Amino acid sequence: MNITCNGKLIDLTTPKIMGILNLTPNSFYDGGQHNNIDAALRQTEKMISEGATFIDVGGASSKPGVEEISTNEELKRVLPVIKKMSQTFPEIFISIDTYRSKVAAQAVAAGAQLVNDISAGNLDKDMLKTVGKLGVPYIAMHMQGTPQTMQNNAEYDDVLVAVRTFFSEKIKAAHAAGINDIILDPGFGFGKTINHNFTLLKHLRSLHITGVPLLIGISRKSMIYKTLGVDVTHALNGTTVLNAVALQQGAHILRVHDVKEARETVQLMEALDASYPINP
Image 1 (cartoon, rainbow, N blue to C red):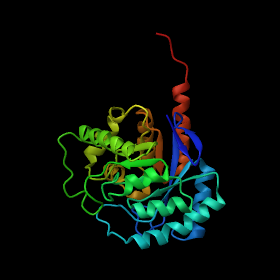
Image 2: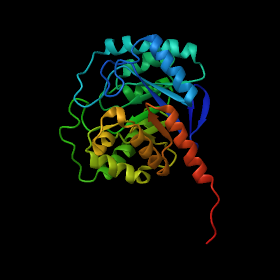
Image 3: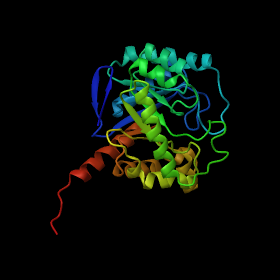
């Protein structure tokens, strides 16, 4: 269970942490906090010190119903930060969170080493072949519709079957486009009800496809704070609990806002797995 980033082999048999760096004014949790270079670099340094292996840089919010921004605006937000990050922190692996092939290509040229696409190529017909030519790992997420419409008709006969079928098709398409390293993301909250999200998490092992890592992004999402009757600022404890469940179900990467807590969760779950068995 390995991927290759920038010529380096990353072993995912030990789960890794991907820290979220939103360069947007309107993300659902931390919008506006890191949307200048100095603030972004401070947050990056903090997440690296807390144990992040990857930093996922996003310049366009994908929360439900969000207004779409232009490609040029997205590029203006992400490129200066990625260039400075790659110079300042050469040890970190930078992921570009975009569904646009033009943004993906320019971000990789600026120093990004992975592409994280919420649409798995469905919103840009050139994405898969672009990533294949770039030769970088590709995170393909399951989403129904677009960020603007995804919650309008969140219905499935069987959400597990739908997501697994989607994954199988996307793996074939990605390989055909020349992509070697693929990571799958079930897309919690993207065109799914709260019950769909918990069903996916409870049966996450059924989504495993041999040799393909799973990335889980449930950090501070509505499945947590709506279930608990709190707001997003009080969803860290719930995030930690569900990340532990995801790790028990075989998650390989946790995509989070709070790196320290996620890293500690991985450490504790590893200690649990390594504990001595009791003979019956």
